[in-house]
Structure formats: C-alpha cells, structure tokens
Length: 222
Image (cartoon, rainbow, N blue to C red; front, side, top):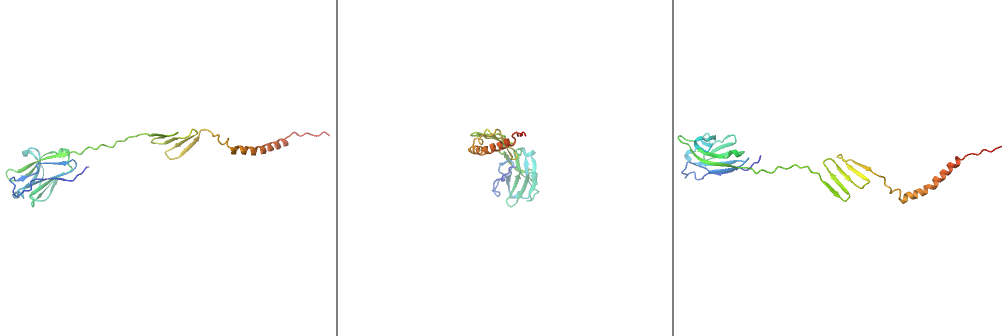
C-alpha cells in the first residue's frame, strides 16, 4: 500500500481575536492511501465543549464520524481520530488510509447548548498514478556467427558445427557428439604411408613362410 507523509491543514492562528467561534482551512486534499490532518481553531470559551467531525454537505443532516469527550484525550474510530488541545485552542482531525470515496464535505463542529457552531471543510483525494504493470514475454532468439549458427530455446541449445560433427547440449549440460562420416585425412598422411612401407616386407615374408610350410610334399618312390 502506498504511504505518504501526513498532510496538515491549519485554520486561522489568531484564536484570541477571532470573531467567528470556530475556523478551519476551508478546503484540504490528501493522497490516496495516505493521510491528512485538519486543524480547526476555536475561541477560548469553548475549550471544554465537545468537538465533532461530521460528514455531509447538509449541516443539519451530516453524519458524525468521531467526537471528543470534552477532554484532551484522543478518540479514534475506524480510520478517523480527533484530539483537542486546550493550550492552543485547536483540535486536530486525522483521516488515514485515504480512499477516493472519502472525498466529500465535512464540518468541524463545537457542540453547545442551543445551536452548534461549525465550519465547513471540503476534502478531495488525489488518486495515485497507475504504474504500468510489468509485461511477461516469452521470446526465442536465434543468432548466427559464420558457419556455426546457435539456436536458443527454453529447454536446450543446439549447436551446428562443421558438416561432419553435430553437438547437442542437453538441459543437464551433457554433451553428445555424433560423427556423420569418417575422415580420410589419416589415410593420406605421410606417417601412414611410411608405416605401410615398413610393414609390407614383414607381411610378405610371413606370407612366404606360411606358403612354404603348407607346400605339397612329394613322396619318394623306392
């Protein structure tokens, strides 16, 4: 929940010379989700009288939200609190966790015998700017470098190397290499040719010995 510093609105500070028995700021505003405080001033003779915070455009039909008990003790009801200060001849009304539907006409009232005294206060609520919600996107990227393209997906990475080797990267980081054809480079290397030339006479000698042992035997006639 978005919070802000309390907003305090003050009435006229000249409590001793005020002609009206009670004065207030007239109009106040506060941020949605935050709080605001309204300070109303009254003449000293009303010090011990009950102070009220009333809601509604019509004075005679407004709804009392909270009121003091004729003392300086703070009284709180729901999201609204009120506290009287006999030293300053003021009482403060605080509205917390402001909502848009809190915007309305209110009254600071002094309860007395006969007709109560009050002053109107217009309350407006400043809405919190709607921040854009983060978007969730799923994308597949494909990057190609030279002759070795790399395809990136959410489950595996497939690297295509030279034509004779294919490498597959699995999610468990194991690598499988499959040869598609046999390289002929070894067969044409000088080392292989020298090896053949050295081994050829030995193979021929062994072949001759085998043939000589297995030659047909002629029996001599007596």
